[in-house]
Image (cartoon, rainbow, N blue to C red):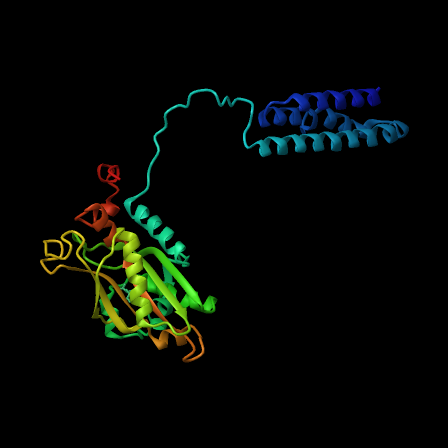
Length: 339
Ligand code: PHE
């Protein structure tokens, strides 16, 4: 009797699986036949132990292969639904949608994604990197030894009980780490959060965003640096901008520069934003210091490169006309909803 029953169950299951309209239904069928507690096939399998040996010999293999067959049919059907990309049951694509409130991107994220597209198109890889880094990568590998006065330029958050760890004070902290993992030619940008233990005011915040860029290859020169910066600014501001270089000091570049661009608000004529000078300080940059390339383990003298730091937060403030940096982190919806 059991043999016939099994045959019947198998047919029944096959038919039901055949017309199932969604993953929910398939799940139900699975339970009905294979459910551990009272699935129909499971019950027969469980009953085997009370059967006489000859009966067991006949029913056992049949029940087992029915189980395997049903499992396979169910799996195939599930895969089919998954391939369809949607469940058919309970999902009527002709129904009008119901309203949901969705969030939107933070202004910093908007600027960051725009920049990533620009840099990608110029052949740069985007690597976010870590927020918590070793003192070595944040300072020492960048030619800033302990007790060097340059450390005072960046008030640092240290981690209690872990003297060797710091919250990165600049995205430059990723330079050597990435160089260690890659051989030149290298074109990388590192966008992300940086942290400084600063008293906050309209233009200072403990958490802000930078975008580090660097190129390492044979024969990279200052002209490459200037040209690249001009191209980047042209892409960002969608017009030609004039740039000028002034000397700037950062231990990990030599020579180091402050790259200014002609004020976009007044076109260089002089206005409150550029404090009447016609220029805004925008991109600290320079030729990567040989000591940094040495930290990375590159053969002495083989490569040169340049690095630059774009203030993402600063750029977002310029782009959207935001005059208080604290607004970015406040989480005030009245501010955030404007973008
Ligand atoms: N890391 C520097 C800062 O945060 C900026 C910088 C980056 C300067 C790259 C030179 C080259 O102030």
